[in-house]
Length: 158
Image 1 (cartoon, rainbow, N blue to C red):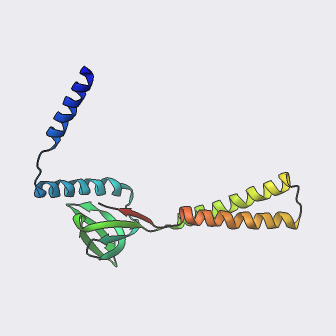
Image 2 (image 1 turned 30 degrees about the horizontal axis):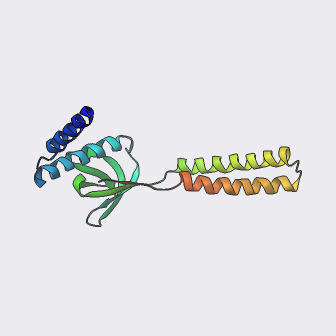
Image 3 (image 1 turned 90 degrees about the vertical axis):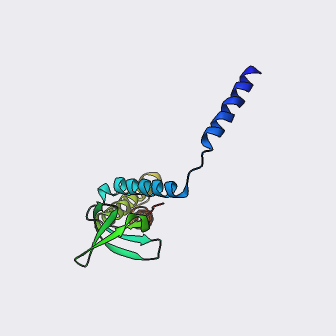
């Protein structure tokens, strides 16, 4: 019983301690700083990547990523440098690359080889049946590879 009383007392104090009033201005500034830090950390590996930046106002900017400096997200589009305030960014869409298409091809060939191996060893098929299994496996591998690797990546920034 004594332990339950201590637990209730501890929970009461924790609730009272957390119930401080925080003004909306402080919360807003804090959220902006957190958002800026989040974008800076995420964007380290994005240099020279093609992307779309979606703003809260519905504006979509497309270009090559240059960096994040002084609360601005920098893109190069048509030879011009665009500066977009980080606080106005709703989401970022990383565009697919040609190396991603290479991964789709590898997935297709790998699945085709796997289906052919299963057909020849497990089902003891020969000739045209093997070609049919290889074609089906390649089609399935291509589909899985396309949906897994060759898609745009959307990153929400909240």
